Length: 218
Image 1 (cartoon, rainbow, N blue to C red):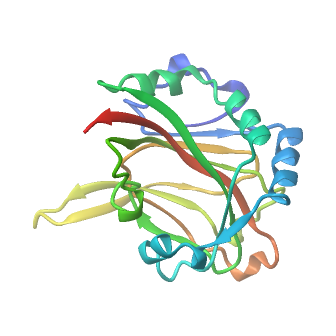
Image 2: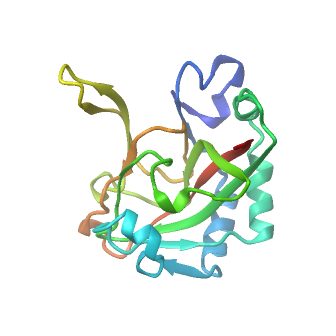
């Protein structure tokens, strides 16, 4: 489902019926500028500096990941008040705790993210007594401009088995990184980020991405 944030009605949407939601104009220009400014102050870490992640995503360029400050995270949390999100998270049984896990990301020309479903990467598995489970993935874009030939689209797939029993992925959504838009989708779900084209020049694909997570007894 794709709709402008101002026209969105949670009563008409359920993640149980439609696993992908795209909200346009989710952030105000003022909120967008706040996150852009915060990104100039964050401590960035390149993909090459994260050995476990880079092993999971080889040949994906050298995109950057940054921490969200406490004040900026407060702004982010305050906006995450859609009732459909809370209802979706609370629909899972045996929840002992739920929380958010989000970071800043910066993709430049040549950067991408290969196909995965947010559950099969070894580095994402928590060995603590209570294992965090990713339930709902989110990515939102805070760059100022993005042209259609700059790449960086979010591709989401439907998985099925063919007659030979082999898993086949069919593209269900191709979501451009439109400034101030937000995409939410259920986990697990195969997806990838297309490579940012050289045509983007010095422009960077700036996003906030992560998960609504729950914790269950192991």
